[in-house]
Image 1 (cartoon, one colour):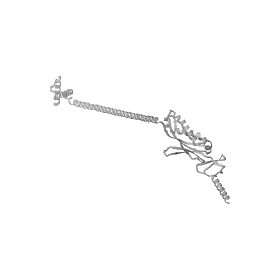
Image 2 (cartoon, rainbow, N blue to C red):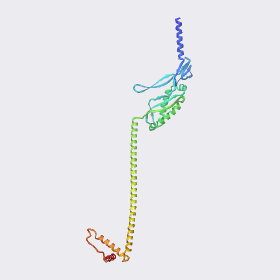
Image 3 (cartoon, rainbow, N blue to C red):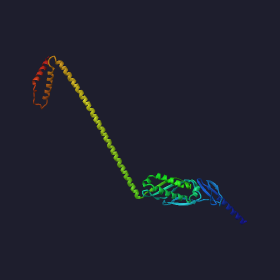
Length: 325
């Protein structure tokens, strides 16, 4: 009885363990490749799945993991597991030396975002998918950077990322993998190259500053010259208008004076034409005015009588007769 009971218990445990090993619970966004007697049988979806123990077995896949130690160094480890993750995965590749078109050795660190679209191809078309993707990315990165100068590499990250994504996506399509994005994390040229680039950038900034200063000075001088020109033009136009107005005023004043003298002569003529010759009167008045100017002033000590004094006296006589009348 004891031996029979022990055998029954052992058989029961064996059945329980065998039944438990035939139940597979697959999480969301994961899958398992099942082989029956070494040949692909089916792909398990998410949820509870039942397989035949011993006959059916999951195919294991090598996966890549990156962790950091206490000093911050990244350590890459590879593990085998029977579950395939269908979510987007990021690979942080270590730094590698690449040579640009102008023969400059540069360290570049890249990030790769990919996703397994066909688990069957990812399992059977390539032996070690993570290692294959890493090597393919490194060689492709060398080829792409080798076609660019250092300056183009530093300033054309989007172009490099786009080229890498297209090439890697096309190459990994056979493996059932889709490459979504490729990002260049760090581009570190040698120390002497960085120093030369900094000097070049500093010289370029100084050159731009001098150019901007010269352009500003040039514009200031141009504006100052234009302002002086407009000021001179306005001043000349003002002087012209003033001269014109003054000339017009002088002409008008002379016309008024001439009109007044003409009117005075006409009145004098009318007044004296009954008594004598008005010309003698006018001549006598002009002689008297001139004689008055000659004797005015402190320095006029000598008095000169005109040569035709008899004419003046005759005119004075005519004035006398005119006054009497």
